[in-house]
Each structure stands twice: as structure tokens, then as C-alpha cells.
Length: 239
Image (cartoon, rainbow, N blue to C red; front, side, top):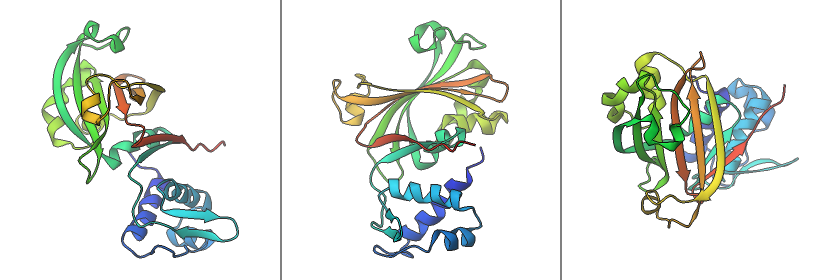
């Protein structure tokens, strides 16, 4: 899956701050100069600067420019949704720790009712996600892979990031569409002790279906996020 240009810009800018090249208190070059240096449009550069602002690393003010205010990102992961690549980008910034893998019949899971798996069974994967370098998970997640792609089971332990990436690498397919629903709910019993919450605490639930280029279903995911460690924002440009 190709990464967005603005994500690459964000990584470059982030590295300059974390490495100390741009120290706290330093003012960044003007947007015109920085965009020219990086070989991108000012619109793309602004998306990268928006990311840094959301991380709590810079402050942006009209007529005074952008100033570095912190040397490390805040301990919260934000998902910026501007397209398919951005929806999948969470895997690049986090690690998936597997808790269990099993075969599951369609009728055994209410979330799968009405959906089709070629074998009548799904590869059910349970795990938690955490930011790299942190031991504390920010979500509890379940992923259900259709029978067509269940052959990835032996390879799952080799990937620290995302199930869909293993499917893409193994089968040569590509995630081309995501249908996603975000809702607030109370924390499920199995997730509570793993997230350090109680079963009555509020969490953010994201349910998603990933499809290939022919609109064939690849996987269904059901993830519960600690709202103190994760947020969702939308950044969409209208053509």
C-alpha cells in the first residue's frame, strides 16, 4: 500500500524535531521555502504541519509562522482520515500484539451475520495495539478474515503491524475500499483489564470492512479504543 505524500512529509518534519535539528523555541522556515526544499506543494506541506500541530509539537500563528513547542509527540495516537491510505495508516504508527487465533463459523459471531466467507468459516484474530516503545495498549481489537485469505495464519506472527498487510503481501491483493463506523460505547468485559479500564468506562468503537479492488471482502475488524490514548479527526480536501 503506497503511503500518501503528506505522510512522508510529516515523517521528515517529525524527524527534524525529534533529532534536535529544530529545537524547542525554533521557528520553522516559511511555508514557501520549506515546500520548495521538500519539493512539494504548499497544500501538501500544510497537511504535514497539521499533523505536527495535532501531535503537540508545533504552534502555528498567522503572520508569525510555525514554532517548535515540544521535542516529543504527545502520548496519544490520532487517526486523520482523508482517504483509504490515511485510514490504514494507524498500522504504521503502532504494534499489534496477538492474543489468539482461531477458526470461527459465521453463525458464531453476530458481527458476521449476513456476510459471506467462501468456506463458511473465518480466521478470527484477537490482539491489542500499542505505540512503538510503549508497553501499554490503547486498543483491544478483533479481526475476522474471510476463508479466501485464511492461509495467512502461519505468517501472522511475523508481522508486528497489521493483518491486512500480511494478506496483501501473501496474496498480491490490495485494500481499495474501507467501510467504517465509529461509535461511543462502554468497554467490553474482555477488553477492560487489558486497557486498564472498567467494563462501564466509555470507549471508542471502530468497526470496519476492508475490500479489494473487485469489491471482494477481505476482513472485518472490531476495535475498542481507550479515548484517553486515541482520537479520530477528519481532513478532507474537496476538489
